Image (cartoon, rainbow, N blue to C red):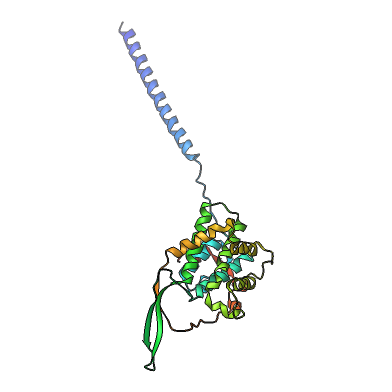
Length: 275
């Protein structure tokens, strides 16, 4: 009887010992499997992008004197990528004219005040005081209004470029510095035509720009929005005090001294980001 009990106890001890060993083996196997999984973890893939600044053939912002002219150049030429010729240079030259002009337009809201002004010889001169608008500011606002109009209405790139050139050429008769380039007593329409042909010399005589200009002169219904954009620009213009004493003299402005294609250089967009 004792022998049987002893045998049973020995068998029980052997069974328990075998279970512990199997359990330990399973744990060790699991640990090995985890190690194998970790060793097969995929490596991180690193992509290297080309971060070099994209450069275009552009005119330097230092050509301009007014930061608003630089902003418009950026909005039209850089942001819209209107960098093709002959538009690029023609637009640049027109923008440069408005950037340099000191011309003014008399405000429709102003009243004239007659003055007597003592000159350096202690004599009195008659003058008139009234308020004026700066032609450059009108032109910049006018162009900005047209760009906003393009954002809300669909126009092809070619139509946009033609309309921008037309808008700037249309108001060249306001730039009094240019009048010395033409024959005396030339009316505004002939002056505008003359200047348009001189500046748009790389555009053919039958180019759409000249066709749209004639539509403006006839106030065609398809270009009425241009009149609206100009009136909108004129409505909110700042007024400046001005005293007129006889015939006004303006600095001579030579179109041949404007920017040309040879002045372009490879530049990045970041060159214009500070303005």
